[in-house]
Image (tube, rainbow, N blue to C red; front, side, top):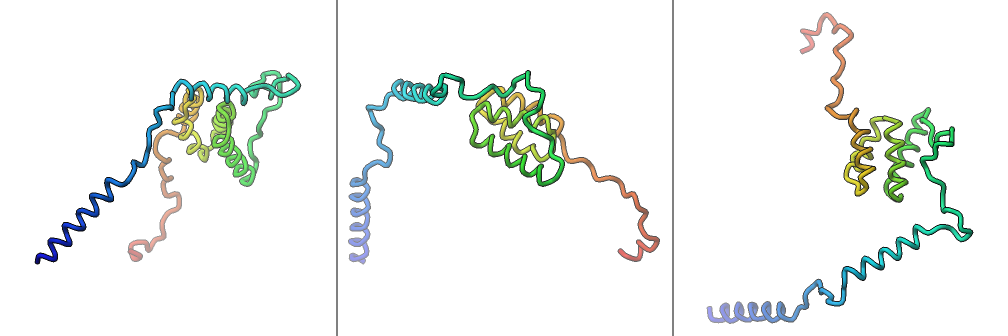
Length: 163
């Protein structure tokens, strides 16, 4: 019995010493200043948003009213629909806020039920324009699924014997 108590005491002592010897997993740096981090982020955004080398703008605005041709076409086949869904999802996942807004605009204009997951993600976006457009686009899809149509064909005469 004495050996069991001595072994337990030694085990508890090892655990206590091991616990004191460990360093904390997250060290808080006293040199980290939120103002410095914000200044660095602003400088990096200025580099990304800058224009190209020749002084012309990096890209033309997406919502140009002068262009008569739309930037997307309504899909005619299932393969085109799948490609459009994949393109919209990629633009929303990896794009800038303007690209995400354009993806939501296309999903809104298309109005297909398969765009509802993308519109739901748009509701949680940080850009208020995307949230508002997603809310307006998802409105026609609100509610439960459409009820199944009533049975159009009469059941066979011997249906009572089938049950």
